Amino acid sequence: MGKGVYFARKIRYHELYLLKHHHLPPRKEYTRHGQYSLLDNEAILNDVRVYLAAQSLGTVTPRMLCHHVNHIILPALEIEATISEPTAVRWLKLRLGYECKEAKKGIYVDGHERPDVIKEREGFIDQIDTYERYVAHVSSRDNADLT
Image 1 (tube, helix red, strand yellow):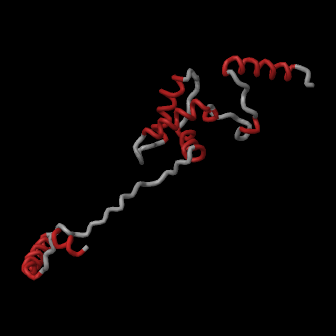
Image 2: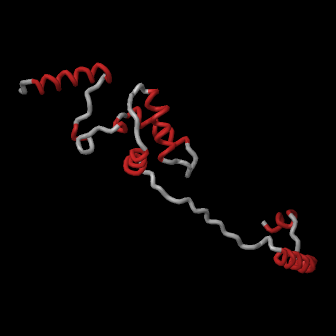
């Protein structure tokens, strides 16, 4: 077993962490480059996901996420830390699966409201109306005889 100052500090650290969080800290092998992220905290991750789900499609920005985390989520959890916009960009892209894309609207204009098209359509409808007298009409009574 380990002995010495380092081992004693680690025991003390784990004891304080256990008393505060009611579970042991995650192992370092689960971290990125040996460093913990605020997003490793499940409460923060859950609150960030709830916030993002409540936003309209295409309105999520790193600045808005950074502001929400720093002014609402972290103070509510009594965590004295902040994140920067580059951190919010990394969270959105790498940890939360968001992509930065320009929203393009696929608007298709076929010109069906142009004056010449309206005039042509009215002429076509008048011509079809002249053929209506030649069209056979079937009533529901006639359909009953067919079955």
